[in-house]
Length: 282
Ligand code: 13P
Image 1 (cartoon, protein in one colour):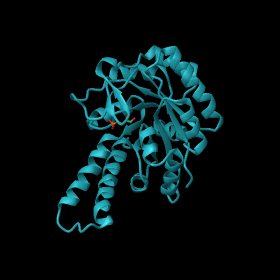
Image 2: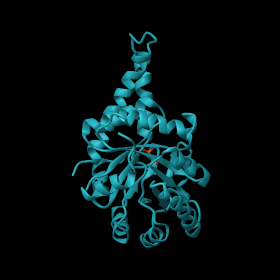
Image 3: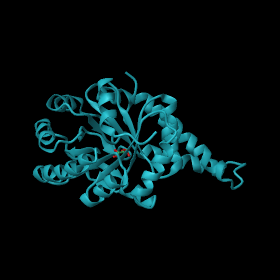
Image 4: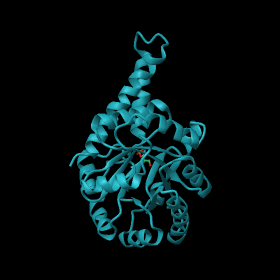
């Protein structure tokens, strides 16, 4: 199956009271693990890469190639999303290369500059049918090239969210409701009352970043109140790395490529199945 646009998948998930998992990918085996898990769970899924994963893979075109290869025999729809991109030129390159969804992150700018930068991306991406996600408020934490300190993080204002969606024409909104990128420095405590107010202010699918480490009951509450896409990265890296270390230090490894990588791919696949199942339950 060819890669799917993200907007209809999110709208379908929202109509069913479910969310889709969006998982960071950087190599073919990771893309395959997501697609295999999606097919096992009979749910769509989103492959996601940011600037550093694209650079690691040798550029955005290579991420598209990896995603297409992994998705070609999939029975479930698979979208390819560009995560947290700040530069217009880079986003255009991703759109032109075959990403089916892009995120413009101008959340560090003023409201009006965020509107302006996001609107320009919407205009370009929508001409190609590509879905656009943007962020309002500022999600804190450290992960990859994201580094937002506590004092710079702030939650999304519902009234601004309504205006932002109307002015920009985006398809999905990443909200600040207390989630954090990376490993949580404190117990996660999502601001569900604020999420409810954002949901009442705008009807478009909402996105939860910082999926690693959020307890399942808070995940469920967020989906019930408008979250249709949940981004997960850090726990994949932890799982993959721990599996490689364990395999390498166990007897019988014998410098074999499948001996080293197959258990790590399997560990990721089990994690994806677990998350896709959690997010896709009614
Ligand atoms: P985590 O790394 O905390 O899972 O967050 C991923 C994310 O939100 C990427 O945009």
